Length: 466
Image 1 (cartoon, rainbow, N blue to C red):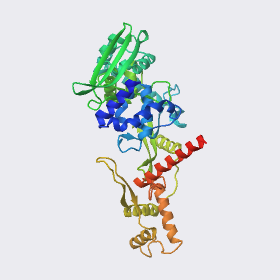
Image 2 (cartoon, rainbow, N blue to C red):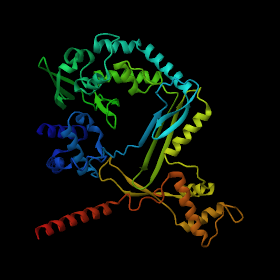
Image 3 (cartoon, helix red, strand yellow):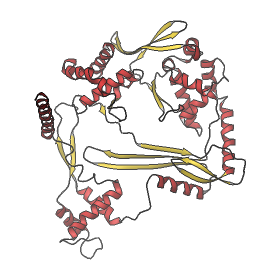
Image 4 (cartoon, one colour):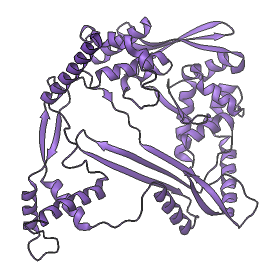
């Protein structure tokens, strides 16, 4: 545990100039409390420290400690590198890959996300033929052969998917290069591999990342070093080929087995109709990867934006072979839209124009100035009075214009109602203009909120004593 704490303190001080004495109460509290948050954070997405991801790849205790530090320091001006993680909702799907013997007939295929599509079975056969051809010729790709030879000792050798899962999840494959991994760690079933130490060290004025891995048998411990990720970034590798709800993600050394696997996979994905994740599976196992004539990817972000001003965003990406008929494409797009909750509804151009007009009249207001140089400013948009906004609108659209609003009720209410309708059409939420009530807070408002919390806590303590 002390090693973990020392790693945190060194990282905070070296990379961000955070005085240990200043942060001592927070670090003490973090270490006292981090075991208590296991249940609290089990099902929630929490903030994370991007700069410390390298330290958390292999150590669950450190991951928990990191989350507790986030909870304690999230709104602290000394920690501008805290980032809220709210990943967008994403879904994807592709046609297939069940090969049909009924050539020329219609069949129902599952696109995922409860989307079924009527699909000519001849398309499936054509796609299988292309998939098998690409897998066959890329088995002799120079990079693929070189990698397989370095890792497995034979340029045409492959391993099973079960073996690939073990290899990718082994900490040694994240650090050792292919030759060292083959020499020390293969075959994986006969080795016990343990990551003994992993963290930043200072040596001769340089900040390094050091890893120690023990391998039984033959009973040796290898210590490796590289430049710290602040100078030589780690590689993010995604592996979805495990029986888990979400893909596994690893931070690996660039010249490691998995680092080189990622480099080749990205190149294959750029040049061929594969994803990088699929290419990684092919390189290790030689499996034929389904090349779908029609696939999609969709994203729904939820509410994003600033503290005060939010909006929603969604997008659909279709990847289509040029020989797919347009009626199939249209039906696919329609069903994906429906699965995301988007229907064909009417909206008024005037309402959108009112929203644009009000947005153009908004002005910036500084809510909070940072006390320390380089820290965050906080600001929001404010609007003129609605009566003034309606007057300016009517100057642009005078009496006789179909977009003109009268000066008296109910026209005043109609103007604002149309603004709200236009805003929801454009940004998907009412928290755009004038914004989320009470956000962002001024320094005085924050102080009052903290004092309220302290008062409530003190009151609760007195009640417990009584």
